Amino acid sequence: MSIKFDRVAAVLFLAVGILFIVGSKQLASSSYGSKVGPDIFPFFLGIILAVLSIRLFYETFSVKGHGSKKEKLQYKPFLIIFAATFLYILTLETIGYVITTFLFLFVCFQTMERTKWISSLIISAAFSGLVYFLFVEILKGTLPGWPVWFS
Image (cartoon, rainbow, N blue to C red; front, side, top):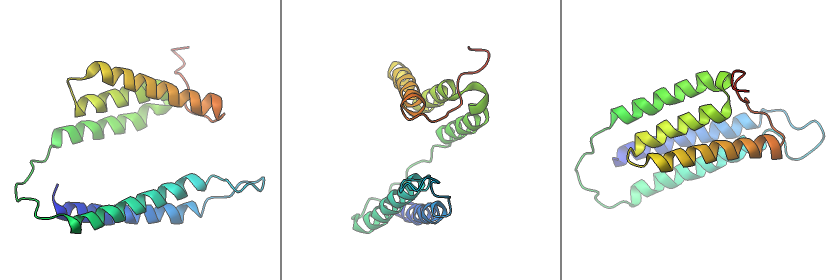
């Protein structure tokens, strides 16, 4: 990528990180007096995003002449992943977390690296199943379950 693109991206990500930090402080705290409330996760995500964007911005100044060869933008993979994300959002509630996340990850992995479909299949299945199990069974959270027609 170009250095100019990295600088602009770093500034935009820094703004998003700051928005996360500010927005998280507007969330209600836990009603039981606990120090850990629903604002902690987005707050730390904002801090991490802000720190990483500052690092990216700093690295754009420390890069020595990176050649003037321009990379060709790859619109097709971007559009495939964008469409997959949009479908993921639309179908998460109706199809359920495990199936939708598995399909989303599989499509994204295949878009990035077409030749490794077996490892894409295994990683997609393991990730979606493990996250669902950990979040729903261990942490007692809620995620959209299996579709009605599946159970």
